[in-house]
Length: 312
Image (cartoon, rainbow, N blue to C red; front, side, top):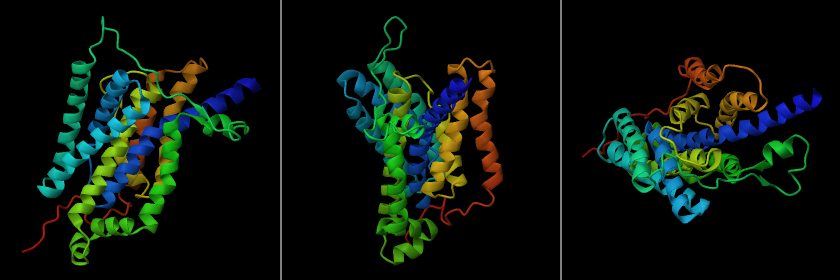
């Protein structure tokens, strides 16, 4: 019984970090967009485009990192489209974001069917990212098999947290994007290019969302399936509010979501008899609960959802 308990604990913790990875990447990207004053509801479609594009490139070329680069590139293209619609044209951010999600959802499957036609109805597969043991750290009890024996994208997501925190709180770029998100007119008067800052943030957000999507087809799975992100993009939008736009709180929120999400996989692996459909509901119920609990108390960027136009 002790072995089973230990195995359950280790499996659960390891799965928590893996399930949290795409949400963490996507939410860090969304934090860039929203801190600059743009609500990017196109993240779900961008993630699906990243999943599809990353898989297609890896399937034909056979290099996982080229697939990740392609996913980031297509994510930046989707971010560029969002920036053109919401920043340059001044379209309503809700409408522009939803349009990009619908576009990405349909286009991702179209490209997959166009370039990778399943033979005999059997979806093709690739060799996904495998866990990498960190020498000297993977042998640490509990921490080793849970944190230091993970696929490369997990390490990338964790490393990005302090990097994004440093950018937000210790760099000129971080100060500029905060100023743009709070008062774009004052920022423009101070010499900060509002349009360029928002474009840059949406490009970063798109790249991270594309990589987050690639996780599903290139690490969590070995194939692309329509809608395989299962609403994680919407979860990212909720978590960035829960975290109050802080990368460190985003990590905590992503791990909470990942832990709840990991329960269904862990129970299934250990043969625990529990209706898996109920477990599948838990992460989304959690998302709704945190929105209800913190949405009214969150400190939103003052210029969020407000297009900026220079006077004169």
